Image (cartoon, rainbow, N blue to C red; front, side, top):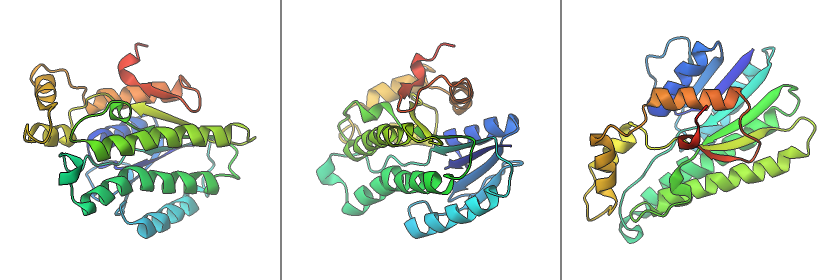
Length: 243
């Protein structure tokens, strides 16, 4: 059996990924705060910004998974937040902490548990991190978000380096989904120009129909994944995918 564990699978890219993998006969587990009307997908309601709750839910999930006969096991770290868009000095300490927690600390924790708990499973094992071009491009107003995504890319490279030498190691890659038509984009377009100098670019992308749909992104990630297109440690922008 092919199994996918996904964070933030109730909306946006996460929902599209859950539906795509399920349509290809994967058993899909989604960890997210909200529950959605997703057919044949096992949804676990968990506040991913609460480390203890996340830790316990993930361990319970693995106890269930280990009962299956597994041929491949994939974790997609997808859940994230943009946080307040403003210069750093205008962002509250609570908001900074919440964004770093959800975008960086939680994926580190979940990846750590995934690697530890799957050590005795001899099957294809991989982690796909949904990162962002913001990891390499600085945007005024996005200091916390850009920082959190740069950290995700470095996590990807470090996990790959640690796991490569192991006989039964976990492959780890980062994928930039491009600019996708989700609630996050709506939030960006509703920002004041004084807080985000790149605002017009994102308004233009929407008005010119240049945003990717979540469905397209999910289908492309599935192709990249199942064709073994990426080597462990790769950081890849799907805008460069033309297969």
